[in-house]
Length: 132
Image (tube, rainbow, N blue to C red):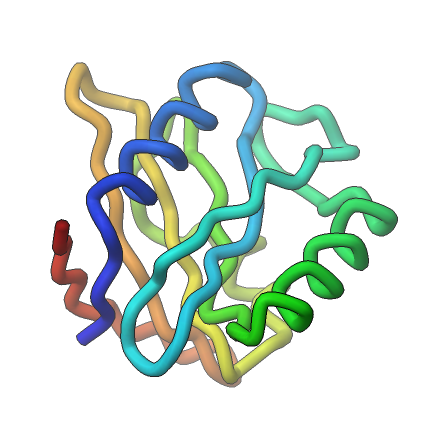
């Protein structure tokens, strides 16, 4: 189970809505089992169907996270028009087995968010506990 603060959920949903119909993306960071920070990163692909982090922004975020004494726990991206489940490309591009992969779906009126552990093309949904 992964814990995430409600304000972080609100921030990443807002990010996804702000850049719609482009996929939003970024990192989620914290300590132990609780995500306490979100970091938006520009999608250099500027695409409705896939994303790539802006490398300069990515390294800046990694540095900020280290300086804050926390760790990167997940990356997130949005699916503007499809469910909150990993696509074949998402699975293929899940290179880091030590983090989770959050997906925010805007396909329905109400946004949906799910988290996945993806290792060697094996996908397991992670339980999310939203806390204050």
